[in-house]
Figure 1 (tube, rainbow, N blue to C red):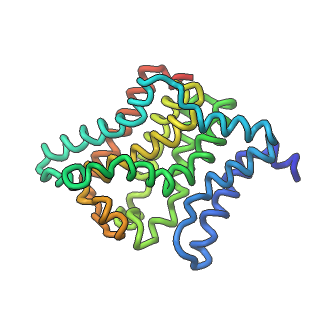
Figure 2 (tube, one colour):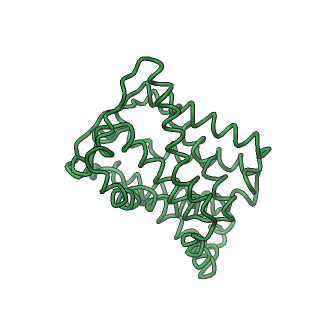
Length: 265
């Protein structure tokens, strides 16, 4: 069995991720098990590479000495792309967001950033960028690896499109292909940061992923720290979301062209 897992480690990781994440939903449980990818990633690495693999995974997750430039990219490139999409949305007749968080509770922003890591990237990145990305990059080009990760990442969210409490439910199942495209673009940009920081799972995984989630909430919605903890929904601007997907995809294509598909590898 162990030999099979080592030979088919990617298949094992995907199946285990889906089992951990989807079983609560399929059995009528409470929602979506967000830690599925990370748990599956750690288990797969432990079985395939043992203690040395786990030690290397921890080193990548703690790799913070990568230069201030890449900290800036990981933290603020998602904000720049969001603002570009916002500008296009405004030119198409949309109204300016209220910027409630920045105006009323700006002092909570660093704490909110740290808290959102727990509810999202921490549960996913030890799988997507911890195991899957380095595994795929040993077998194919970085952009091909990014597309496969984006495909798996996007489809992994499928149960959320049936969950009335999730933002994906508001998007509707008809927008699942566009959602997968968005994840492919995001995965491509994250691969670039990951490779340019010499395999920093911290920057190219946790921080960039969290910044992408964080700026969307802070810049575009009426959410505050108080309303977020109260579970209040801010709704989805479908026009803006579509524009944002296009901007992210074009940004990823531009990086691919500039790096000739190597994405910093």
